[in-house]
Image (tube, rainbow, N blue to C red; front, top):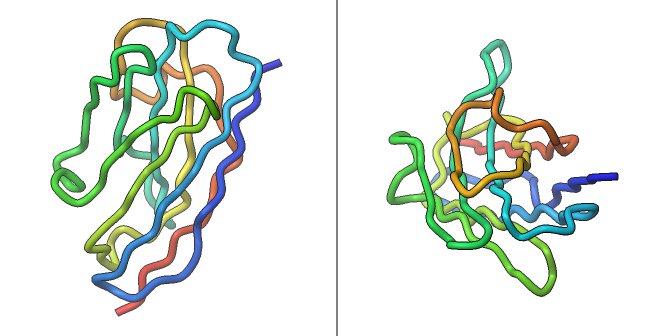
Length: 124
């Protein structure tokens, strides 16, 4: 049974930073990818960042490139999203997702397993 549990969300002022964590369980193979997506109020879920677990190669949305960093810890089976220089428009529920494969896609439909999400609120 694959389970993803996010944590680290909260309220932060604009220009601040947060680090999200996603603990992965139930995946026995390292040949999978992890993605971070977010959904703001009244909007569709959008891609944020993704990483190939085995190789460490990453993909980023243009809106977060240069500010956010996705990484993973092999021993602890945890994927992170370091968010710096936060803006009010970054406010959303952030969810992590997983899929088998050697590539880290950007489409939400390529990820069969999802966490419950963690709220990130950035105030002005």
